[in-house]
Amino acid sequence: MKRLIILSTILLTLFNCSVNEKPEFLGVENIKILESTPEYIILTADALFENPNIIGGELEVSDIKVYVNNSEMASVSSNNFEIPAKKEFSIPLTANVPIDSIFGDENLSSLIGSLLTKKIKVNYKGVINYKVLGYSHSYEVDKTEDVKIK
Image 1 (tube, one colour):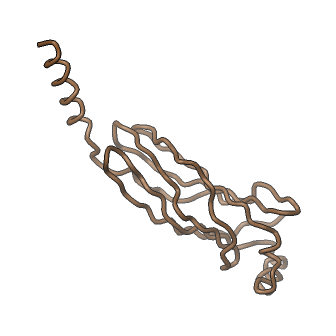
Image 2 (spheres, helix red, strand yellow):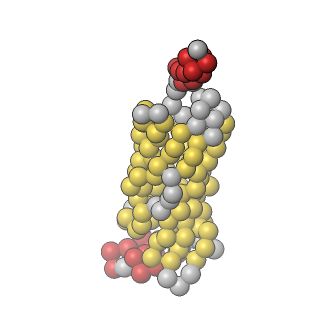
């Protein structure tokens, strides 16, 4: 009898804790140059979400490319992220852009324009996947921002 009560309590809890809605993707903000070295420029951004569910889940960054002045320069490197329940949260999106790819022949005209305006056009484009209890959803990321060069 005791096992039946425990089992029914667990099953009842699982059925009542269903995923009502997917987390809401609020956008990408705070695109900036974090660090600049002779080999790399490190770009960062924050992907903002709000989870209305009483259970968490996991976000996986999948194939997000970084474009600088309309040329693909790098991919975002990121770990999977645990989602907090009933909370607004952000995940960092970091990319190492090799300096030699920026100074290539095909980017020379856009580089000169960037040096004159002291801004580069940065675009994050790709997919972030949400997974919880066998349910999944993909969020399209496509955010462009002008970043000041110091």
